[in-house]
Image (cartoon, rainbow, N blue to C red; front, side, top):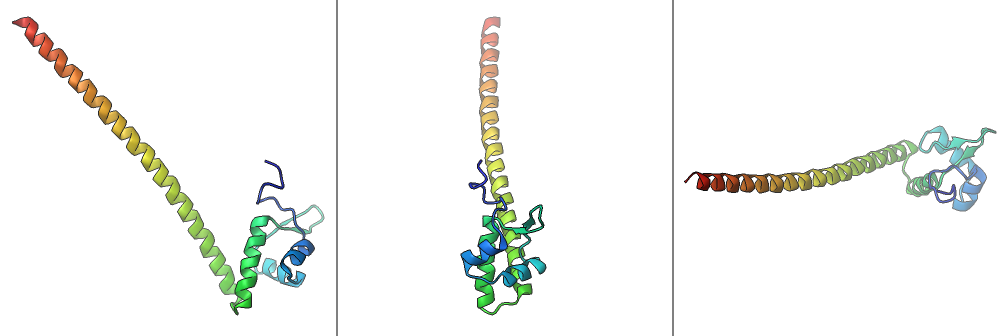
Length: 130
């Protein structure tokens, strides 16, 4: 995958993100300080944001404009991330359950086939003794 295709590659500087979203750089530094979003740092210690983080920053800016505190915003973001992880785990478990159920059906059919064959062999053997 190319770096530009990966949403989790830290490519964007504070200035670029501030320009893209029409925000002040101080706002971006504040949400970093409050750990609402924690961008990676370049070798020169500059913040670098991913596209995923930029979407979160858009959400944070909207909530802040609606009058929410940064503490409340951080908690909402944390809960949304936890929910996304639980949904991912649920989907993974549902897929695994489906696989196990299909395997159980296959094994049940195989067992029935073997039992029918065994019953047929016994009937044939019983007929030989007569």
